[in-house]
Image (cartoon, rainbow, N blue to C red):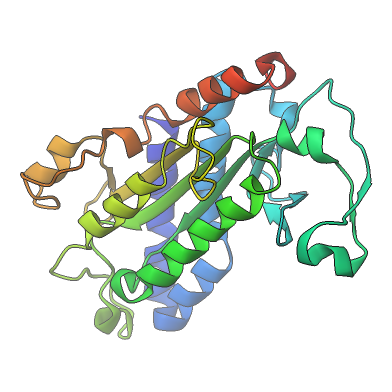
Length: 276
């Protein structure tokens, strides 16, 4: 069993224990605690290490949640979920004199070259109200990449986003009962959005909103063992995607995420600065 699969089993256990013990309050609390999403953080770190990344270069380290690296983008400084910091690049503390950050008289402790050579991966999930919150979530995801790429156009940026194939049923949650909605989530809407911001290329200088590599984790928790989808065929066979849907899922799946993003990094920077 893959490490990501064991993490998803624990994700399901924590979520459902919280529902049984605390109902709506329990579900809200476990999500806000970051205990669930940190499982996915560690899965991503594990894959990077499996692909040869030096564990000492990953922040926060595998199994840890701090320290996060705060990188100064064009609009704001923000803690990044997972960073792989480069060796052999000198940090250069810099006074921020660009964009709206200039008025805060803040310092960037890393400098432009060091930050550009840092591999950054953001990791998020949306476990309920997928349709209601979609536009806001898409705009936020869009803005995060733009904030960094406007300042560091060569930065390699990844996005990992988890959604459930079927949402937990909120009415059942109110009674401390685990159950799922009958209708599946709007997978096509999410696939369309993430496909549109995937595979950013330096040849096109207008797509700073995009990510070098995105993975959309589509997980069916309505099973004893959660199912992480890996192919268009699986989604179609389980009724989550139309047969004539014009996009494929393979470019967004999890299987080769770490390998792909490291290959992109190697095309732009010295891969030996982050590998063993």
